[in-house]
Image (cartoon, rainbow, N blue to C red; front, side, top):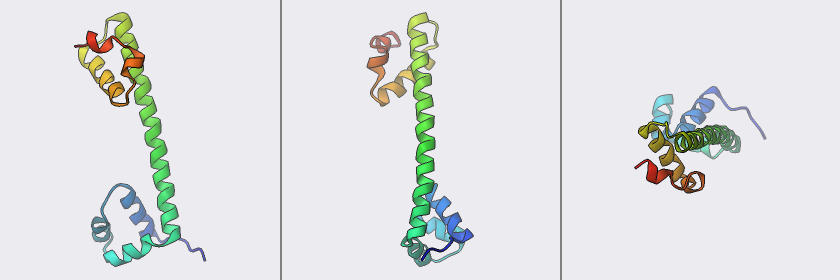
Length: 114
């Protein structure tokens, strides 16, 4: 048996997806924590939550891909033209180091920016 989620359940989904705790969600929506707990056991509620989280994950992947591309461009420009601010190059290298690809992009860039 499938039923449509209520506006309050949809609001709870978005608050949970934003990282709010069950206590915060219950207080914000003026419901008992037991009600929210019961909703969390509802398959339709869980499926809707997973769909929201997937959209968020895809958005974050897109943003990260864009940041990585920009960081690679900055490092390449800085190494090639030696015309990139120290802070800009360090920021780009920090991101690339964090994801483990700095040495593949510009092996000597770390030394030049120090």
